[in-house]
Length: 405
Figure 1 (tube, rainbow, N blue to C red):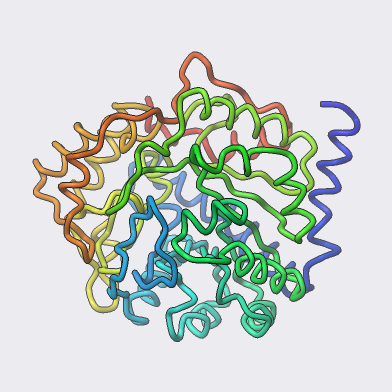
Figure 2: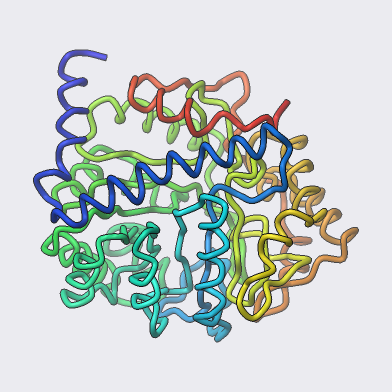
């Protein structure tokens, strides 16, 4: 890295200090950074001592309801299942018992869930990443989030104007999303934008112009996902090629040296080796039906939380199904078994007689119909991190926790 790169990284790190409200900065520093470090340390100790399992982070899909109909989405279109407030509250309480104070809040569209913000506000010692399409991030909602301070919106941008409308099933989606981005900026929130990268949006979103566009709009981080063709309308023809996945990885490594915002992925460690967060035990998922799942796109489960989620600790500690999936995925690949070996995965869920955890009740057939596609395990072509900051971050949080031997 050059001196210019170091200066750019320093400026990126300082941006929130000049753009976010004092309460937002306090909650970011204490709830997320400090408590998260403590929670990860507690998770590492449990793994090292072979203590009862509980993940470092819990992802919670609170509702199937959504105002959009996106192709490749695993959430059941028109589904009405939602967790109760008591269940969401219980999941958070169980997590905090184990030192986990960070939670992902997903949908559907979580801002359609009545009473959500009041619940998150009551857990003022926790930190929440709110996965949203931005359409309900009004100035009033953003101002409330500013007063709370413990929520970072992650706003989905799946392409520019034409691609957003095509992928998301409505008109003027991009403009509505940018209105939500603007509301977050005006309120002084710490927030990010996310994109599920596929063939049809690769050229629009995997470039420096998109990074600078989102930074200029006020986003402090940009989270890149790899498109997984799942759900009722999977469109496997839109999945990335092996070459595109490699190009995405190279792009991230290069741009991290001087990008004006943080570039996030959860796919590769500091050496560029592939990582599956669920295989390492770092994170698992609760569906809108209360099913305890391996990860959000894999909607097959053996266990359900009860009315107040007080059984969640026991489920994580005792689930042979989840433990078996962690072992299977780690032995199969360092990448994504859902992409790289769906047949093996289908056999596993059948052998365990796992149940479909969706409204549409067609996941088993969808899984059986999947074909092998390229994943993010690049093996001998691994591209190490070049930025010292990201290298340190990845070395600290993405070393596999012994999952890969």
